[in-house]
Image (cartoon, rainbow, N blue to C red; front, side):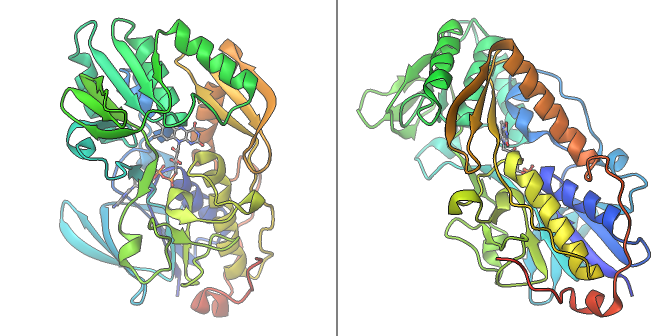
Length: 398
Ligand SMILES: Cc1cc2nc3c(=O)[nH]c(=O)nc-3n(C[C@H](O)[C@H](O)[C@H](O)COP(=O)(O)OP(=O)(O)OC[C@H]3O[C@@H](n4cnc5c(N)ncnc54)[C@H](O)[C@@H]3O)c2cc1C
């Protein structure tokens, strides 16, 4: 009997995990089903580019997975029952149920309004393709001189504000940050950020707590408010509520708690990767919601599943950070080098070279999805029958 592996979500981490599993396990021994709500692989790291009016290369999943042994199922996941080991899905033909022996949960995340009144009704977001396309249409209708306020001074906010300001120099772009602009960066990194923001004419409101969003302004804690024809909300990501509705152990924010092999600490036949998972990384800190750690986490999960099914060695390479790559429009960028646990060091790369570097990183991330073993030769191993039945026999490293 074949071992049934079901992977939920074909974003960066789910697609990598499915593809890598298919390279590691003998086709006769397993079925690998990748469930995706979208027919294309969405380069989520480019959503600010899409919103700013750029054309993104279509990447149909059917082409990406043709001949790999991964079966693509275009459907929306509506629920998971970890006791019955089933996944409820819905597609054009109606509701259906998939049964798994091993589940990889990689449904990612969406935008996070943080419960701020009016944000859900009036703000635009770029956490996924539908939101980015909606913002793109709205920006196209704006007249010269109108104001766009980007709420959130994190990486996504920096990328969104600069991309919009570069693409639409006729607009009045502003950014609000809860702290100082780029205050986690090195002095050189911050200096460069200010320089680029100045060149692009972006107004920065530092230490501004946004308390509400209205149709034509954002309200701030100091009572002054900022006029905004369009508000773009980028204050972090929130996971989808599906995991929280299961018996899986999740954090207060709904991320699935996993061990060092990305396996659920409560249900050994479930793995979680990417934004949907809470794994402890270097410095005993939770891994940041990012491709930077999500990609290696997906390798880790796939290799651990393969090892457990075939009696191989569990992966033990620790996940670490190297840099934070920030695009600042198409002509400028900032590569902030960091410690293994993601703290800024002095070294930075700036300017056009940094923009080219970041573009290569984005291209590399998409290439890595289509080449989940990074082009290295692999051998598909035989699933040991007793392991196929139990899904596990090897103890996970801490
Ligand atoms: C504008 C922007 C820029 C970013 N830049 C960077 C960056 O430079 N570097 C970096 O490291 N990170 C960056 N990130 C973060 C990064 O994109 C995410 O952390 C990463 O995509 C997480 O990968 P994932 O596989 O967990 O989720 P995703 O890539 O979001 O994939 C989840 C998949 O699940 C699908 N899905 C969701 N719900 C369902 C459902 N119910 N049924 C079926 N399918 C479903 C989605 O359609 C999607 O395909 C950026 C994010 C944004 C929005």
